[in-house]
Image (cartoon, rainbow, N blue to C red; front, side):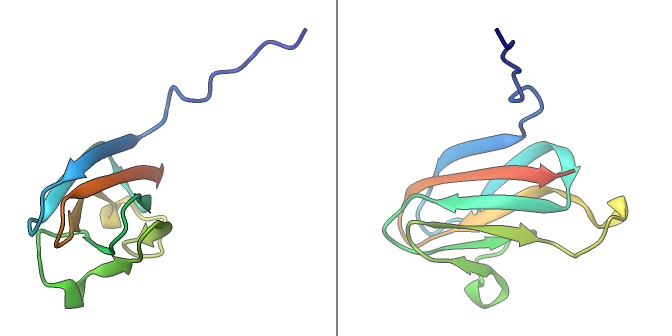
Length: 101
């Protein structure tokens, strides 16, 4: 029999319900370069790497979809970030996984 390997140990994941009309902070214990953002809602969400509610300066993720958000295409850790902010007009569930850190 093959032994099952648990690859979930190093998973960097935050899932929570965001508050309507607020930039909700998702904080990670590592500095990441790429984040997979999942929108489980029936409305779009907006993502940024700084605390803002200006949707013109944020990445728009349509309803019921996901997107990899990259702060800057680089391997330089100086460009990494540990905080991701999500904004929506309505409260709902969002999951973010740091996939490159």
